Length: 279
Image 1 (cartoon, rainbow, N blue to C red):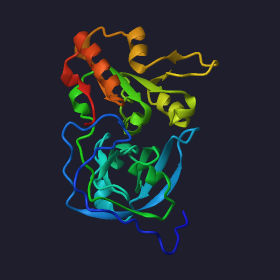
Image 2: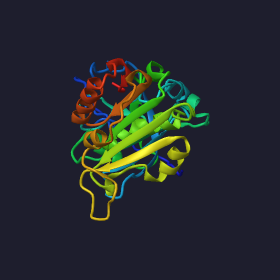
Image 3: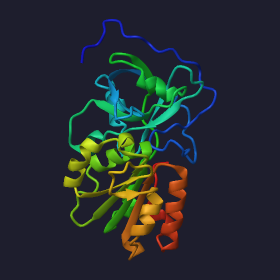
């Protein structure tokens, strides 16, 4: 990476409110918004590139080689990093898509994010940055992430993600979840079409880790022969909740999807404490 000799610094307004803008769940707000960080730091952008064919999602990475404490605070898939961005009067919280350093077994110095590029929103500003630009971020990550210990005894785990909600699911998978041969993990991943589906280049790796991937397209082209409609509809057609006490579920994405899947699982006997979200 070649940084410019005089990186641009981004100027920010003082936050007066908190808004949760998770690219991991664009339509879902945190149940209890995290407090505004009392400590902030600067980090340079290391890369920005389109994550989908239609450029509706972007990969954004931050170089944290000079922020060891911040790196070390990422201990669970599904955690968030607060950002202070131009044109935003409050922090936004983005889910980290890279796996926690300790769990991945890799020596890394970056946080990756999957950012939804909605014109006019603070998060879209991230997609316009260049390597070397500096952003203000919280001094540590926030949230508990996916509390997978609650389903540690599960034999079957159903994972549901829509849109940019796949971001923390990548973190979960690449942190080693599902590699236990005593567990079957099925990922229902819903988007509008293949042009909006991120991480397709990672699917082979995920499958080698034991993840069964079920893409679901709501508006496919005529060549698509896989599942169609919404994730909750595809699950309803394929539903196989045999022994709820030995199963678990992980949800991240649109609010309607999360609510409908939760209702269906609870109706089939799955306890709510075995249905995980990262908020």
